[in-house]
Amino acid sequence: AKEIHLVDYPTGKPTPEIYEVVEAPVREPGDGEILMRVVFMSVDPYMRGRMNPHVKSYIPPFQKGEALDGGAVGQVIKSNSEKFATGDYVVGYNGGWREYYTGPTDGFNKVDPSLAPLSAYLGVLGMPGFTAWAGMSQILEPKEGDVLFVSGAAGAVGSMVGQLGKLKGCKVIGSAGSTEKCDWLTGELGFDVALNYKDYANSTELTKGLSQAAGKGGVNCYFENVGGMHLEAAINCIAFGGRIALCGMISNYNDTKPEPGPYNLTNLIGRGVKMQGFIVSNFMLLARDFYAEVGPMLAGGKIHFRETVYEGLEKAPEAFNGLFEGANTGKAVVRVAPD
Ligand code: NDP
Image (cartoon, rainbow, N blue to C red; front, side, top):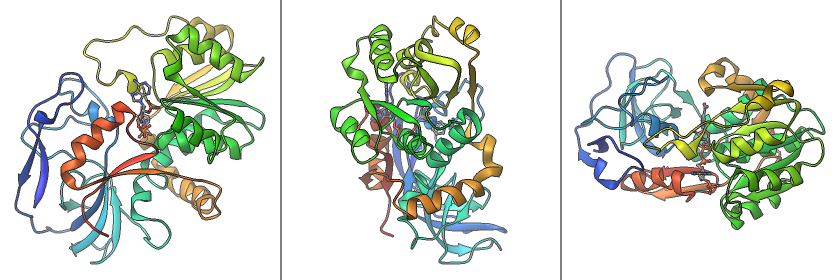
């Protein structure tokens, strides 16, 4: 069966040459293991961090000459685990970048394909949706009437953040990289304002746009997905007692030298702002609360989502690069096989 190997570590934006599609034998599951037929695999920005071999991180780097890995949803076709039966549909943090996954069941959960399309368990009901929910409920704690700003707003995490904000009674401002994305935010998703950041040359300009959108009181909550001029503009506009959740800084992930940090951090002191970084796995124990709250919202039509689907395992590198090019609206997934 096919799997995609990492041939070389990238410098800057990944190029097609760093990948190789390899035909490898499918291993039989050992004790406690499953064999899963992968239906969808996820591409996520954090995978770029795993392509940096020398950076110490919360997750080890990918190894050259081995298959890449990541989130996947599929069907168990052989099980030596008490957790799952043959035929079960499951989602896990492993199993991506290949047609079949053989391995342990840690981090895998059973999913119900009749409740939502399988791909949703990689997006709105999966890791990105949970990330949005955790950053909002555990760090930003928005209150009714708060002004919430989210960057990367038309992506998997950002689109969920804004909608959760609206449900909490916030004024929601999002930024994204195209008119179509901004129209989706203010249309179907109900954001109050959408800023196309490509219309702003630098953080000073973006600050003007954001400040106007936020109004006199400024931004109470900023959900950071992008970094760079977005963070600077958000800190310029942050309200007294504001909160900033540092979720990601995708604009820097392909940098070959570090970008200088925001010049305006002193605002955080005088304005008594809390700024906190987080990794979704910090909140794993709350996964049930996430499903209990967001499942009914989705079923009740209160949450909308979009997906950008790439067809075929070979498209995974293109799908991954698309994250850095703004090619996806909502969650980017790769269909590896039919349901
Ligand atoms: P998205 O679905 O948002 O896809 C990435 C988007 O980022 C692109 O579509 C693009 O949208 C935008 N983008 C790319 N490059 C730039 C740039 N230079 N400037 C501004 N925007 C850019 O991905 P996710 O929702 O999966 O992830 C969003 C963020 O959340 C990432 O930073 C990611 O690392 C982080 N994350 C963090 C987690 C955690 O546990 N802390 C877990 C999951 C995600 P556009 O067209 O608008 O430019």
